Structure formats: structure tokens, C-alpha cells
Length: 501
Image 1: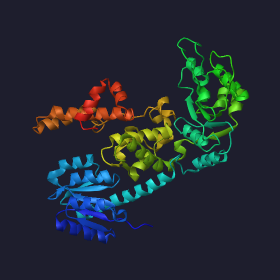
Image 2: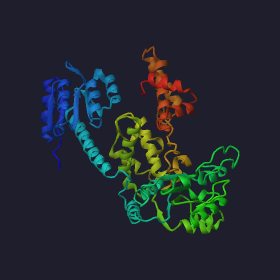
Image 3: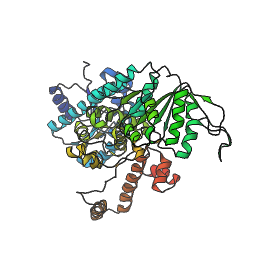
Image 4: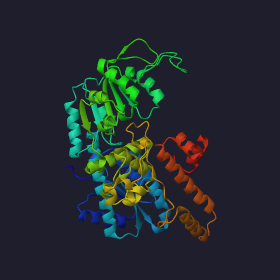
């Protein structure tokens, strides 16, 4: 086991350093002390990773520089390092700035020593837990899952690794069927060829035939050039047909012919095109029932159902939630260019009681929402979205109690998925409406004698609205502006004015 890195203490007050050093040593926590930020930055520049900080505890006001400036510079070099800012009660406004800069927590002076040590211990445990999580994540970059049901899936992928056989993946919407299809392709003899995916339920019936098989010039109005379809695009590789259960009946016949003799015709074409493609299909529907209802061809079902691979729902693999949540928080932070949020054990336990009707896709969307909306770097249960906070064990057993998840959220195709961003209740007070909360907040500010109440509340309202829209669109500003009904230049200007960049 690696020795624990020291806790760095930065304070110009010798008595503070002495008290913290002695108390931490009694807890078997190694320390290293500094009198000003300049010394800390010099030590970091020296680049001794083994003796680098496990966490950093820094005063906010020192003759040699500001603790907030130090926080900013340290986060540039060590973005995952927990930083605790010590501040006098008169500096509590600065504590807000500390959180905005990515501080783990702030410690008001004069502090109660046992509580200070408890806070530092919690930061150390969080730091160590994140280190282990990051190591595991590096080892499992492709698909995540330790649950027995997922291990069965991994074993099946391994057995099929040298096969070109047709595979049918079944599972609920949002469970990750496209990830399995990609893994099957990556570990197959066709790995050097293209992987082409198409969601047959997302494309209108009159366009789907052309999407799959292509068309000749002049085949229909608007067909000004010849176009290769997905079968030709996937030549030598794998074609993933998602939501195959929704394919129109007449197109099922054409697909059956391709699977039977390996040839197809472009729309409007007269020359057969050979298809050297492995087909992997997926559906969330009961295809046997669809066959009985007469809406899915029985011969096509048997042609596709050579090997069936069932993907478990997230509620069947609850032990995977901590690993997946940390992975998605890291992923979202990378996409948005911010520091990854950490999630507490209590928040993970609360997630474990949620039904997740949208499965892994919904968990990913919740983590993206948390990356944008959670107020502190450590996510606690109170920071979780409303539908998770309001859940209970009975709700977990009754998926209908959770909000309905749209097809856009359920789709495994990330390019088509719309994040399931919960309603923002920033002004919700004690179960009252947000308008009532706004009224109470305004009354309190007006009574305080301030003369910038309009600006203060407007900025908070606009900030929350824009951040929620950006969470909904995964950071795409133009799309967020369209959904808010404002111009592209307006949202860019507002982001700059409000400091949301």
C-alpha cells in the first residue's frame, strides 16, 4: 500500500499551523507547513509527486498573497486536489468565491479543533476514494460493470470475439445496447472496418429505405445525385440496426433478402450491390409478441435471432451505480472543461434507491446535470435532482412513480439523445412555489437596505436559466439559445456578463 501523501497547511499564523500539525499527527496524518502561497507554488513546481499534497488547507488572507489566488493556481496544476479554505467570519462572502473556484469546503475561524480535524479527515477519505476510482476507470475505459449480470455480458462478448455471426441485443431503452454492439465490433475480425449505426425508429418511414440502401440519381424528387446507404457505408465492417422492432413491415422484407443472399438494390436502381456486412440488431421490444401480432416477420426474426444477448436494466445492477456515476461525472467535466465533481457515499446511496426508468442513459444525464448545477465540488444528497430526492424504496419498486423518459433520452445513440434535465427548483422553499420563494428572497433583500435587488435577483435568475438550458443541450450554446427563445449573440453575451464561461 502506498504511503499517504502529506496534508499541506498554508497560514502566516504560526499558532494555527502548530495546532493543526499536532492535532493531525495525533490522527496519524502527515503534514507539511508553509507560511505563504509563494512557498506552496515553489514546492509544486519542484514536481515531487510522492511528497505532493493529499489535500491543501489554506488561509484566505496572508501577507504573501491571497488564498483564493492560490486556489486558482493549484487547481490549474492539480484539478482533483481537495482544497479547504480557512476564513474569518467577516470573510464569509469570500467563501462563496472559494466554492466558485472549486474549494472542497471552507473552515470559518476561530474553528473548533475536533470539527476541523473531522472536516480534514473527510477530505482525505474523499481524495483517496477518488484516486481508487480513477485507477479503476483507467482500467475499464470501454464498458463498466462489476455486477454478475454485466459479467455475463462481458463473457458473451468474449466468446463472440472471433465470430461474424448475427447478434440480437435485447434490453430496455437506455441500458447501453449500442455500447455492446460497438464492443462486439471492436473485438471481432471486422474491427478494422467501419462501425455504422442507424436508429430505425428515429427516421421517417419514407426516408428509411434510402438511408439503409441508398438511392440512384433521379430515383425521386430531390435525388440529384447517387447516394450510398448505410449498408454500403458499413462495407467490410458492422451495421448496427437499433430499435429493429419498429422497422416498417415492407422494409423488413428487403432486409431479409439482404441477410439471405447478401445483395440489395439502391432505391431506383437495377443493378444488385453486394453487401459484405455483419449485422447486429437491437430492440427494447418483445419481438416474439410483435411476431404474434403480425407486425414483425417471423422469418426475419429467426434470421436475426441467431445469438441473443440480453442487457440487464440498471435496477438489476445497482452495485454498478457508484462506478458509473464517477465515470460520468469525469466524462461530463471533460466535455464542459471544468473540474470533476465528487459524489458522497450518502448521495450514492440515495441514487441506489431510484428506479432509473431511463437506465444508464438517465444516470449519465443526471451526472451531467450535477456537473452544471451542483453548488459545491462534493455532491451531497440534497444536491441531487428533484425526482431522485423525492424517491423512496417503494418508488424504486414502482418505475411509474418516476418521470416518463422520452425516446430521445432512452436512445443509446448519443448523437440523438437529449439529456433528461430535471426541473430546476432553485427558488423552492419548504414545498412552496418558486414564485413564493422569490417573493420572500426579495423581501429579505429589500429589508436589508440594499439598492441593487433588481440586478442581484435578475442575475441569479438568468444564471440558473442559462445553466439549466446548457445542461439540457450538453453545453451546446446555439441549441440552448433556441430552446430559451433568445438569440445566439444574446446567450454568448449573457454567459460573459454573468461569469458562466
